[in-house]
Image 1: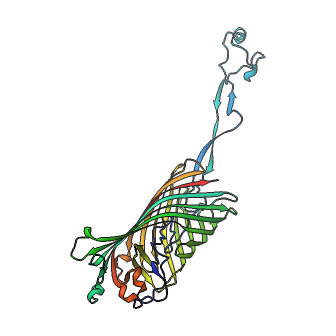
Image 2 (image 1 turned 135 degrees about the vertical axis):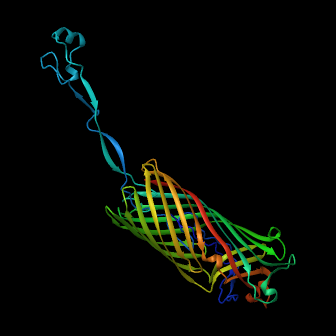
Image 3 (image 1 turned 180 degrees about the vertical axis):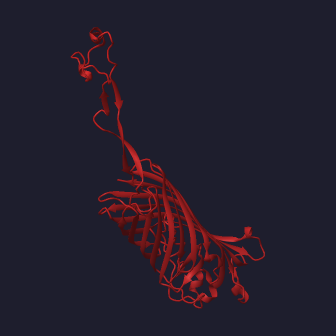
Amino acid sequence: MKQLHFVFAAAVGIAAVAAPCALSAATNSGAYGASTADLTSGPAQPKKVTYEKYETQTKSKTYNVKDTQSGSLYYTAPAARQTTGYYTATPAARATTATVAAACPATGCPAAMTRTEVVKQEASRKYYLFHPFFQPQQYKFGSLTGLSYTGNSYDFKLKQGCSGATCLVYNPNTGNYFDGGSWNASQVAIKEDLSFGITDTVALLLMGRYSMSNYQIKWNQINIPKQTSESAKMKDNAFDQFGIGLQWRFLDNANWIGYVGGNYQWQNIASTIGLDGKVGYKVSMDTTVYGLLRGFYINWDEMSYGNGISSNGQNNFIALETGVKHTINFEGGIGVFSVLDPDWTVGAEAVLGDYSWHNQAWLGATIGWQPTNNFALSLYGKASVWDSASSANNVNIYVWADSDLQDPSFSWDDHCVPAALSNYREYSVGLQMALYF
């Protein structure tokens, strides 16, 4: 399961951000609007990067009907079968009806021979491709293809207590002043996770993603309803994520199962080293409960990250964190996976994460359909249920025009306004197809 938390991040022309509302170093107007949202599973962005996992099989049983011998038929003779030479127990040597009737004694002939079909039930293991511990066996491949939709939004209010125009944002083209607004982002992505079993317990992981993103910042005019607000929009379509990793299933017995793994991911504004692990207890043949722990070391290309839009020579950048080159994030949680019948499975996870500039709790659920050992489909959804970003009050917003950078007296302080966030929301839904070959 990839996780929910994500950040639509952008440099938006800012190469380095030091103290609040103070920027330094050169600019890089070529970097802007970069999205790092993970739509599937899984976690896949600078703030929370994960792989869809291919781990091990369940202990659940299905039943196959197998022949006990060629033809599956045993012939049985009547209990009162005669043993005289005119009648035998084998069908090939059995006399015709007329012959038997002529030879039968007055007491009558034996009853006709009967046959019974004998079947045997044998337990067989089914490898559930959406099991949280599934991983391909040696020299086999697992493929997970996902199509997902993710949304992220929040409101922001320019902080009071500052003096004069520094409390407001001014648009010289319209002559309007603004005291806040909202951020909205949506993303459709196609993601492929491919795994290969080096051994029965060690697997190689590869992944890539193509995303189509839409960003919008709405500015609310002072004393005017929100529906008349001005907005800035931007689209960004790109291959924005690639990764490679290894996973080792170090534990798998009658009661317990566990794995540890590591990966490295290249993204459009950062590179990430991720470590993760799960340990599960097999409550029954059909149900496994587990705990998970993940950590991410993120190396940012620049010294700030956040949400930004650059359009028609105008730049809007909501700096979620400034003056940083590296961040370390953690998340932990619990989950459950259960087999409802041989073809249907369900799963759920609850996760709490520390993502540097904010903390978040989210819930996710999935239902899977697997008619064969080699093909499965699943539908999943996840959403944040609590986020400290809804009360964040130390966010800085920068607004400037490309032409401003040509002014020798340009100062980032003149273009920075502190703000507070509210109503922070994240959610994701998606469809996944798994193959095993």
